[in-house]
Figure 1 (spheres, rainbow, N blue to C red):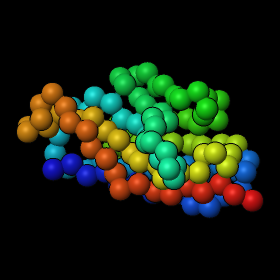
Figure 2 (cartoon, rainbow, N blue to C red; figure 1 turned 30 degrees about the vertical axis):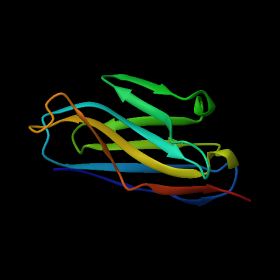
Figure 3 (cartoon, rainbow, N blue to C red; figure 1 turned 60 degrees about the horizontal axis):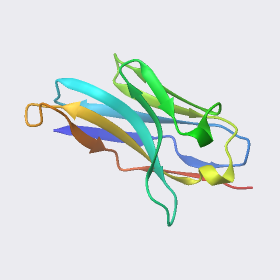
Figure 4 (tube, rainbow, N blue to C red; figure 1 turned 60 degrees about the vertical axis):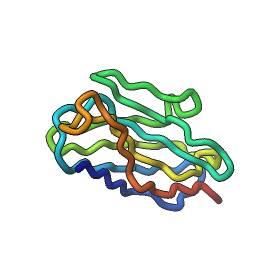
Length: 120
C-alpha cells in the first residue's frame, strides 16, 4: 500500500513564500512521475507542477515563481512557492504515478491535501 502525506500549507500575505512537502511511504517498484495539483473553490483540479524522469513542467501561471524538486533518497517531493498571489489560494494535492505489484504499469496516488491561502 502507498501513502502520500503533505505538509507546509498555511495562510500568507501576497508576495510571501511557502514550501510544501510530500512524503511517500509504502511498497512500490517504480515511480513514474511526481507532482502537485491544486483545486480552488468552485474550480476543477489543475496540474501545477510535475517531474517525469528528470524533466519538470509547470502550468503557465506559476512559471518563474514555483519550483518542484524531489529527494530520491528520502522520497520527499517539494513545491517551493514564491511571490504568492491571491489566485494561488487552493487546496494543494501531492500526486504520484507509481508502479506496484498490484498495478505494475502504474496507478495514481494522492495525498489528503493541504490548504494554501494567500490573503492580505
